[in-house]
Length: 327
Image 1: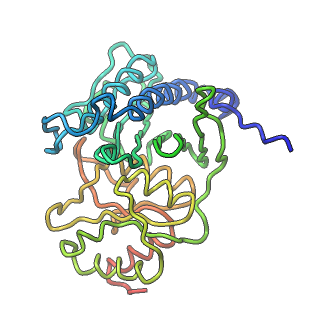
Image 2: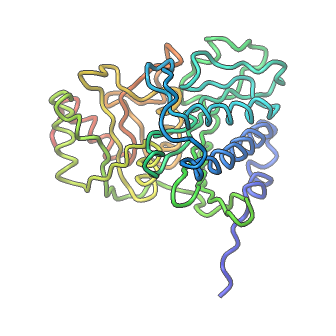
């Protein structure tokens, strides 16, 4: 039996979105992300041999210790995106300020990224990833705070990459979520998971129950209901937990707690991009009280609580947190 042929990323992009000129530049940006992902994958594979384990000793703008992989990933993606010719600005949780690219064309994009999500997992050879939110620039508008701080629903696309037993890249645009697997032999991403949709049945919940004592009572109640209904799966890398739940059916929670009263995950670099992917696949993304993609950001490094995954389960959590029920 002849195995099915999986189109390459370039082949998919060549026919994607018809002849809509608004997407021409987006294809360039996606290819740049794929190029950077190949480089990051190669370095992560050799992490222990390439002195990529552990931290640099520096503290980033988030007040967190910088992992060596964070610094490398940020540098690689900043370089490939800035040199793509279609990106006007790149924001990263590793950068205090957004990097503005001079002389970008009128039809360009702003990319907000978490270059290596779950980077501390590299030390123990556990899955990590990269997350990208992509917003179109506003023609004639300068790149400043007003053009950078935009709602998640204004994204034209979102992408994440998973570096695990295989490398996968998942891309979402309006009404479409496509998954590509990296073929080591050819160095190509190939379409292996077309038209991803959130499964009707939720199987898993993902939450760090080590924080249980620091959550408020309503959040503890919500997690208790999930515990009684679904199996716990928790990697500790947002993109890895989200990917499993997207394919298998599940919900991810990182609520606010007594130490992080505004939440811990970043709105622009993590919640908005993955929230966009979730919604395009038929799922939902919430703070526990409001839709993530509706939030008007007030700061580049703004944090948020996050509930992400199967739409019915996200709504169930919202209902319990609001005190409307416990089941």
